[in-house]
Length: 446
Image: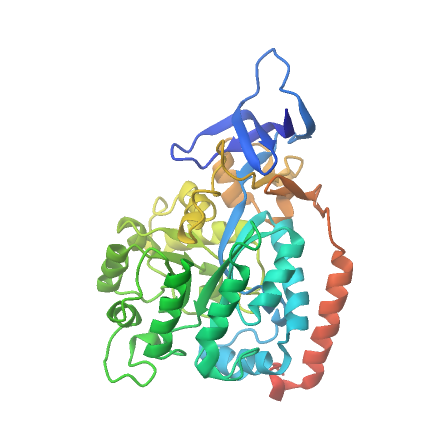
């Protein structure tokens, strides 16, 4: 007998054949999907200990946010409408130095996890400082995550001595490897312009030795194509990473806005994945990543929101809509990035770029029971001709009725099942008052 049966649903499997079942059901036992298919005509549904009537709603694989910084919910709206380097160097870095501690990271992460779950995200790929505190908070919420300890060649929260940056990251990975079935540790180098060659090489070596994902921001701005980090070589960030032998299937490149055709070819040859963050790129005027060129070259592309300081939300359904429409207008072609491709970037392809495609990203027997149900009672979701298009072009976090992670219902009827969200928000508000009271010189915009 199944533990949970979901029925009366438009089931969008996102499997290799992109099967959509108009009136389908999904059986779950423990944390695993046992069966997926149409409801039996004229026969009784299989018995289960509990059931959820989707009421004609759309069931998607749990969404995968391929790039974010969870604790940065603390800085949502702190320094908006600024160029990237001004935003980063004059506001975000100082604010982090002054206010990021294990305690503030804990509360910011809890708020981020609540926002993700309520918006149908069941897995995220994070990179930040004090990542041990991030991991403990994420584990408490039941979210699935790849969590990267940040590495940077400057004094950072939790790592005041930059010479220990890689060692701290490696210690964190050892602590969290095989500790929780939902938490996968990672190493996250901030960027080529904040990390020297030795740091980049050592961080990748540590990640490879542990068999974990290596993440890095790359080519987010046009200026990064110039000489970086005092290196006399004039080379693109991708050429530099390639020279250091850092590109492979276990490397996740974030943004990739200014990749040249030569860069794209190199990334495709090496098998790297890319996390595309269109709303953050738009807000910071970083540019439009050549995603159609990535896809044509066979590069797997996931979708990310980036952190709340540069987006300013964690709503991946809205991000899908933005991605699809942005590339249509940029390419002057309404067919260039169809809804199915946008949804794939937020599900199966997102799972692929973070190394979890064997376990999540599609609704198939044997995979983890990570699912999201969109609410059919909303006027904007009526009628449904194509549930894929409906999810991408109409969906938002507000449309998410239920969220299930590893067979556990985490959101039911638009409300978190576990956790006191009001208490979390109150603590974050208190932290925000401290940041605000510190004044502009400590990282607040005036």
